[in-house]
Image 1 (cartoon, helix red, strand yellow):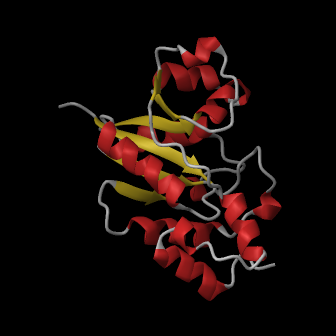
Image 2 (cartoon, rainbow, N blue to C red):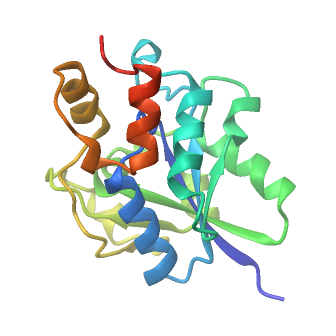
Amino acid sequence: MPLKKTGLFFGSFNPIHIGHLVIAGYMAEFTDMKEVWFVVSPQNPLKPAATLLSETHRLQMVRLSIEYDNRLKASKVEFGLPRPSYTIHTLTYLKEKYRNTDFCLIMGTDNLATLKKWKNYEQILRQHLIYTYPRKEITPVPPELENHASVINTRAPVMEISSSFIRKAIKDKKDVRYMMPAQVAEYIKTMHFYEK
């Protein structure tokens, strides 16, 4: 019996927005992945922790976004792992726990460009496929990574939208409700997130 191919889309999702959802939907529909998990990161080693909303609220926003799509799942797997979170540790844990699942990574070409800075990146490339989506910023990807046998470059739609833009816009009292699912916009408004 073939292993179920599951894409892991890591991120802070601070907050989740339509750009994230378009990428996940594309991967679930236009590649051979059976499902995509949004892996909410409690702390990215490369990002300052002070700017992060509580992980439980970020997870809840992801859940609200995908509640009617059974191809997409919200994962809090990293909440129970040692911090800071390293992708290789999460992958090792998941492979052990879900033996019938073939986990692959979903990342922007900007992340692929910095993959060599990741802990045990060679092991990740040996054991997992990486599906990339294009980013507007032109970040040069080393040729040995761009053309690596484990890297699959997709043509997912490019969207110029970011969580940091949304956070700043909310702080500046701008209406950004169409940049995220309505239930997420409502949750942020009710909780007064990102207003200060």
